[in-house]
Length: 90
Image (cartoon, rainbow, N blue to C red; front, top):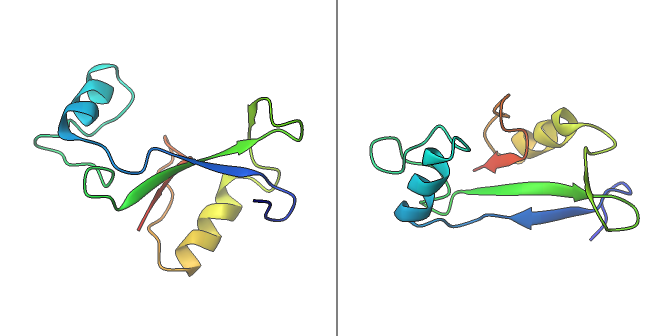
């Protein structure tokens, strides 16, 4: 799929409580999955990353994360989390 010559891929959509706790323990999330619930646990969040033109590595989107989050918000999504720009929540 290509949008404005970007090549987004979807990663984490639904997470178990155990997986969320594991990511929290690794310092990769601010949600512990028990007291602070992630949108991923409820299936209301996705992580979107962007591929390089050769499809071999992850890159920052050409238009920037802010551009895609503004588009997301216009469609009803929540604003960008500054420390986690690849996170898109409904």
